[in-house]
Image (tube, rainbow, N blue to C red):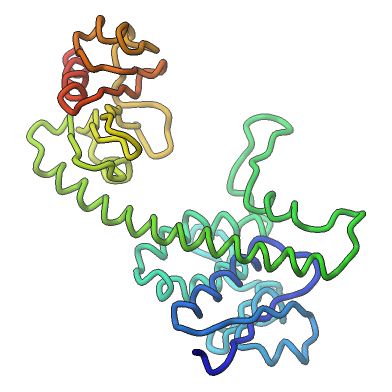
Length: 301
């Protein structure tokens, strides 16, 4: 049992995504150390100076004394890409690697979650809407829905909502840390299979490894076959031309588009073919052999 409870102090009143996730990070870190943390929401300087960790309040950034504010004149610095640090980023920069147990995992999560939260908190847009009047529904959108409306005026309610959201953020961070670690392992295994594959246009995996980040730099890979993670089917997928792109290096034949079961089996001659996506980037078969047959036809087409 812990001998003392560490005080994590942040500001009271309205909250933002950066202070929620900063507090969540510190609670996870303390749990990993076998310690407990208590969150105190205040702007009272006499209380602030008693904190073991102070985030998003107090006007000081000094990791040596666990002070992580970014509201002071001049801010608290920026990353090389120009995205300034908010309280979440400052806490993550100091403790992310320790929490994740890996510098690589910590950096992945910084890019995936921390920077998209830090940027808007500092008035930096990281995405441009395509459709007028339609904005992305972000973490901040979700969390702000828990803040009181103009009809809600009970201060205790906002503190309860904050703690509820910190718990929510802890769950997200825990899952993202685990999944990122698993992704790292999967990329290594996918790369090993790539190296052992003779015809690198077609790579057949024995598990549904995260192959897209593994093969994005291997331009010779056109099609990847892998077992479904939810059932016994086998998927045949063409490789995107670049990360997050819908454009593919190769497409399945137009005659397959949108076909299912007997119709697809008749066109392809593959007796266990199940489905081909209308946009011709994904096909499915009941067996690995059927998936390979579909892929080889696509390559020969």
